[in-house]
Structures are given as structure tokens and as C-alpha cells.
Amino acid sequence: MSESGGQPRARLLIRNGGFAGMSYEVTAEETLIGRNPTTDITLLDEGISREHALIAFDPEVGGYSIEDLQSTNGTKVNGKRVRSTGLADGDEIQIGHTIFQFVLGDEGA
Image (cartoon, rainbow, N blue to C red):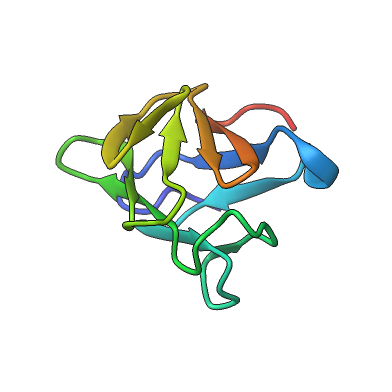
């Protein structure tokens, strides 16, 4: 499980609901989140669009960002609705009713 092209490890940790504590590795350059079974992270949440948001790694900047894909209910980072924004370690991401914590780097599980 090495870093690909200098991409730092990242994961999304669910903070609420019946799946609290579950985490998803963000390993690809682009990670699609939504209700559709073909998304990289599929959530069973009626407040989420089929293709809701995209987390991308930008090698030029060396960091991650999140982009809302014109979802009906929007995407929030640290309580603010965003269209697109950079992500930092510890940021809270709300997609539908699901709240994630963005975790950057290797932390003990």
C-alpha cells in the first residue's frame, strides 16, 4: 500500500448514524461519492444525489479538493455550503445526512 506518484494517503471517516466509525480510503486521483452503485463511495442516504461530489488530488498543489456535482442538497465543508474547495486534515464534510471527517496521512486506526 504505497503512495501513488507522491499522493499522500487520505480517508473519509463517517462520524454519525448507523455507519459511524466506518472509513473509506481515498486512493484514486478522483473519488466519486453518491447513491449510485457505480460510485467509488456509495451511500444509502436519500439526501444524496446519484453522483453527488468528487474528491480529487491535484499533484501540482499536492493537496485534495472536493467539488459538488450540482447536487440537489449541496455539499458542506465545516458547516459552509461549497461548490469547490480545498480540503485539510480534520475538515468536516457533510453530504446529505452523512457527516465525514477528512483524515490526511497515516493515523492509527
